[in-house]
Image (cartoon, rainbow, N blue to C red; front, side, top):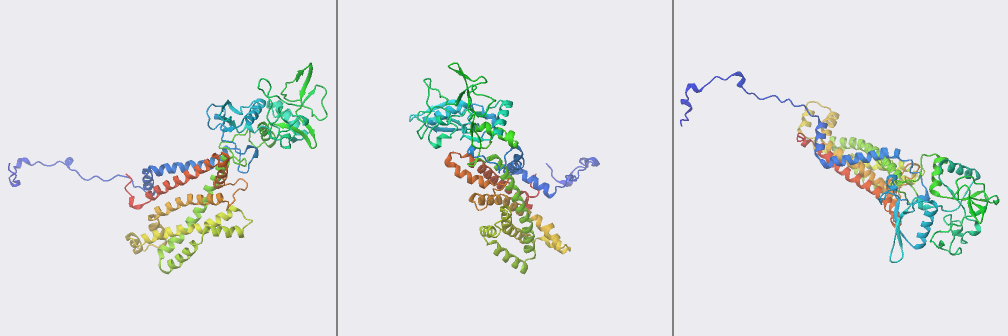
Amino acid sequence: MDNNINNIPVEKFQFAKRNDLYHDKKLETKAVSYFQGAFRRFCKNKGSVVGGIVIAFLVLFAIIAPFFTPFTPAYYDMVYAYATPRNNLFANSNIDFWDGYRQKETNYTTFLKDSALAAETGREIIKNGEYIVGEEGNYTYRYDTYGGVGFGKYKTISQEEFDDIQRYQNETGRQVLYPVVKLKDRPTKEKNKYDANIYYVTQDPKASVIVPKLDKEGQIIPNYWKYEAGDASSLIPEYNSLRIEGENGITEDGKQYFYAYGRKVDGGIEVRAEYYEYYTYQHQEVLKDGIGEPCFWFGTTQTGKDIFACLAYGARFSFVFATIVTSVNFVLGVIWGSISGYFGGKTDLGMERFREIWGSIPSMIVITLLKYHMGSASQVLVLFIAFFATGWVSMAGTTRMQFYRFKNQEYVLAARTLGARDRRIMFKHIFPNGLGTIVTGMALAIPAMIYSETSLSYLGIINLEAGNTTSVGTLISAGQQSIVANAGYVALFPCVFLVLLMLSFNLFGNGLRDAFNPSLRGTED
């Protein structure tokens, strides 16, 4: 084959047409802004996206959750201390989850007392009536922490409240007041004499531990105060409401009897009020505070505080407080660090020595001194001043480092040569390039601030229990004390919140660092 290009025949050549000419095409892509590119790079990091979603969920919980509960951190009810988490959707189900019950292992006497309470009130104190008898004679069953509080002690109320409860009972059909036991028929020990849960005949009224007496069929024997119709004692208040014995009373030996639902004493009327129904009556008819039947989604603490409300309000406070303090520290730290890093020399020397000395002061000392000199001031104000006084130091150091890193770059020298002012060079050219590290530091400062505030309230150094303000750390501290009471859920929910917060913010901060890294610009596609 002849490869000599000088001998190519003429007929091999053809004239090219205009349509056959190819040129490089003009790029028609749209310009991507700095923040658009950062957002695309952030979305590529799946872990950071998940962290951002979790943070959004926690923030929404802190904002919205307080509107879905009638309780506040100021609310408490010692009767319902250590009530287990309950959701009405699960309360009447056969699922042993979120139903307001807890596992209870006890002796035969306590089992009889719970059975007696269930027999009188009609409540399922022992879930489904199911129990297991162990080899040592112990009884194990699911115990209702809401209805199981029973009657407590005998309560003295006014005649007006006595009449109003009867009106409420007639209108709603809900039994609040139950028959009382005549004083001479009660147990003799002082601690048992006024125990309103003892409505039955006992084996030994003089004993310290009261044991119910059962009939031949194994049933509880009521010991209600009875009086013959038309022969009421002056100690028995008039009663025209719902009756356990029915409207016509009970008939024995051809005579008609009624139960006494109260005993007149100095200061009012002594009654047996089932606390579950009395609680509902108080909140719906007397206080009218939007609280109905007792139901605590996350349970209660040892003082009867609603954990869901305390966690929601505590999370809201933590987010708002940390965001405000971090923003203030961010502004001051960026201004201080940019001036120090950009101008350098004696300016940087003086500002950096001051920052080092100020930053070496432990924050605990600052908080202690502020508490000592501002004893009557708000604890929130003390915490804000302490975190502001020391929080800007690390932000200033990070900003200074970034300005030292970029101030001698070629584009900065070019801008200075073209006559750009120092302020424009600082915040138009240098600051955006160091923004990734600075923003990451700010994002991580928020959970660090929340963690510090939580630690201080957990240790009791700062007390935020005032009005509707509380802290997640206070809940965790209460949870630690509740572990011995088999109420681990008190610490569970605030600890889960704190763990999710710290993990998600770390993931989110890593994503921000990569997103705002200028060296990765153009790699998002």
